[in-house]
Length: 281
Ligand SMILES: NC(=O)c1ccc[n+]([C@@H]2O[C@H](COP(=O)([O-])OP(=O)(O)OC[C@H]3O[C@@H](n4cnc5c(N)ncnc54)[C@H](OP(=O)(O)O)[C@@H]3O)[C@@H](O)[C@H]2O)c1
Image 1 (cartoon, helix red, strand yellow):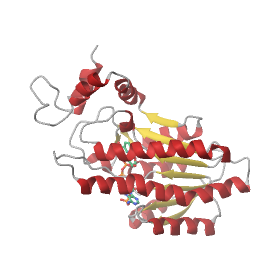
Image 2 (cartoon, helix red, strand yellow):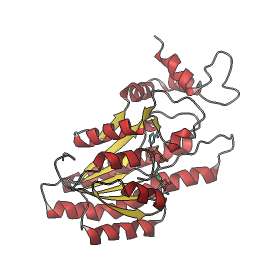
Image 3 (cartoon, protein in one colour):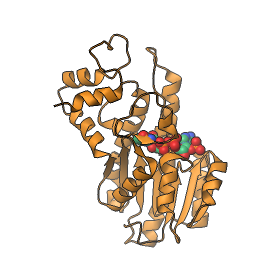
Image 4 (cartoon, rainbow, N blue to C red):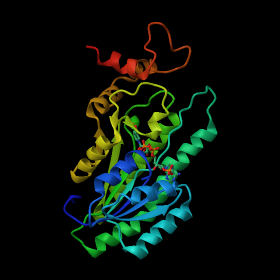
């Protein structure tokens, strides 16, 4: 399905800022009906004012299963189907302490894993309705994971685990649902400049703007690729490291750890230094 050719019903969850807002701008074509969701209703309403598409604001917290179901019911009553769902909402907290911050891990899992599943579960009947209305239509379910799932990174245990769990779930779902003609995709960006990454206190190698990221995502969703990952100069490094023997990859990636015993004068101090080191011949 090419997003430029068809007037579609689209639900972007996590559309108020960052990549989700940029995705809205990419898909904001006359004829499309776009439902935009997040917690910040005022921000969503201000985005809706810029619309060429028909836009409906559906404020929700994805961790609230009932709020997500209510939003899906609104969509059912409004247009009766969904041609594309982008499950983009997410959060990130790094684990800084030697003690595992269990509350932080739960918050991240609640949003990135359980929240995403709430949306997937509520959206599936609407995707099936689109298929039933037009058997030539392959309704699309796109899930935001992360390139961090290719290789564990220091301090990213909560975030990486949530996105890796989501990736596994979605791959399994694809195996079980492909006979229904629902087109399931995973999106795995490297670093993208957004309010989420603006909080990071380390250098982010190969970081790109959210507009560039949104363009890459829409191109990927229009292609046949299951895993839409970018920028490839970053994702290839992570995938390459993941293929190394365990002892070597733990030694290499461990250099980016902030643990006092790991840091020494010989070791690079930031993630950026670390990747610079890795790129040296
Ligand atoms: N930026 C990166 O480098 C990067 C890399 C890989 C993957 N990602 C993923 O890309 C997605 C978008 O991130 P971003 O970088 O664009 O960050 P962002 O600007 O902070 O956007 C996050 C979006 O998710 C929404 N959201 C967060 N928690 C929510 C909740 N409980 N219920 C409903 N909506 C919620 C936010 O809206 P409200 O706050 O208004 O609810 C916002 O619209 C995330 O899943 C993130 O993990 C980002």
